[in-house]
Image 1 (cartoon, each protein chain N blue to C red):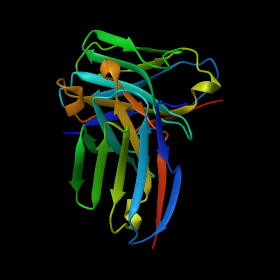
Image 2 (cartoon, one colour):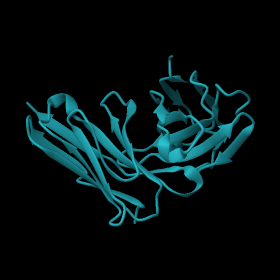
Image 3 (cartoon, chains in turn purple, red):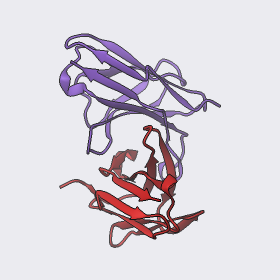
Image 4 (cartoon, helix red, strand yellow):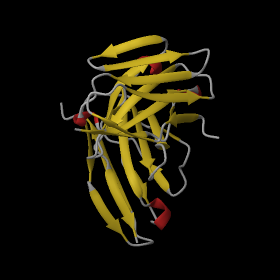
Length: 115
Length: 108
């Protein structure tokens, strides 16, 4: 299994541009998550999904959108990039079941720079 | 105040030393995770525990639910253990809340 894959690895955006960060997992996991990691800060949850067709906001959803049309894919959309969205973005997934018993698997991250 | 606090924020030690990283949390939880983030950025799960103690190789994780505190220990530390160690707690709504991480550097 490839696990959780993310593309691109690195991207530079101009203010106001839009882009989609791709996330795919091949473990048939129901739960998927998008986090951002800012320097010196803990990971913050942006959006999550408990299954295809179901998404919900996390702690810092403003400026982002998601969709979950299949079990495998969970893309994150930035519509109008702002410098405050400069960060490293991680996608993660886990199986359904007791959350306290399930490991989260993380993708390699996407480094985004908005200038 | 953050819901999850780690200490120390940075730790430098010599190869072979015994390492302890602490995590305190202020919310009721159902589980606590320890994660490792290598310099390349990838994050892997080390432990998931809801009570007691777990051991994997040279790593040991303990949790005291009453005191809302967990520790990660590394015995016989090695330069390859250099990484950021992250504590995360599973609270309400089944979502993880993360500490800010502890940057560990082991010098040969």
